[in-house]
Image (tube, rainbow, N blue to C red; front, top):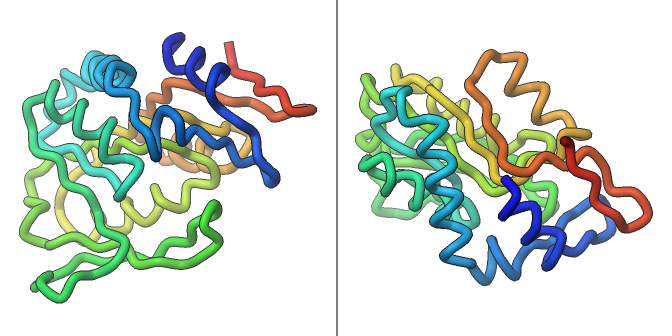
Length: 189
């Protein structure tokens, strides 16, 4: 998606450890026009999949997932990274965050995922796929179907892409980074 790639090139910064900082447009300050276009792009790709709910992980995935859910006219469920005391019947999964360098527990109230749901997972980044695997484990605790995976920015030189594609999921990313070389971002054509 040219608009997203241009925004990454304009405002993104490469940090040590192959971390792309895009806090000026996605995960701290949010560009609402960009999010609207991202929602439209995901809508156009997944609109015929029978999606009943969009699912994401707090907090950076919420804005793009919300825009997609709005276009699909379905609810958005975001998985929490800490279980609140008010969660009566949780679905949980352990996940390691590469950027935060810590383990956390993803959780969702079981009643928010119906057995007949067709879920679309939307997230901001895909690197090694740890967040995705955590979401997948939560969905596997239900009879719901993971009908698609939409990612804003993927680092296809890391293992997450192959994991998702090899499982046969409908995978759609908007900006595919193939490498970070000498402070330069290289995107797939």
